[in-house]
Picture (cartoon, rainbow, N blue to C red):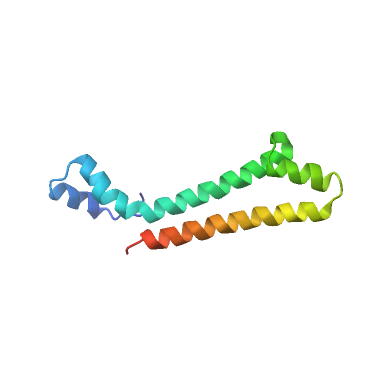
Length: 106
């Protein structure tokens, strides 16, 4: 919401919009691309945190890489899991960026 120009709420007030109308019809459409970027960043952070938690005993893909790759000396499996994680991050970034560019109308 920081990307919204300060004049937009004033314009909404001048047009006589109620608070819900101002939020849903003026502020949210202006802030959509920034919100998508924030959601993309949060999704990537959650993926990385879940991977690290798996390494320290929380289960998931990090646990799989540690247990069946690193501890059993199966380097190929460990590298494959790392590549899968990197591909997931790149896919999330690509989808988030593409969506944000489509929603941005500046």
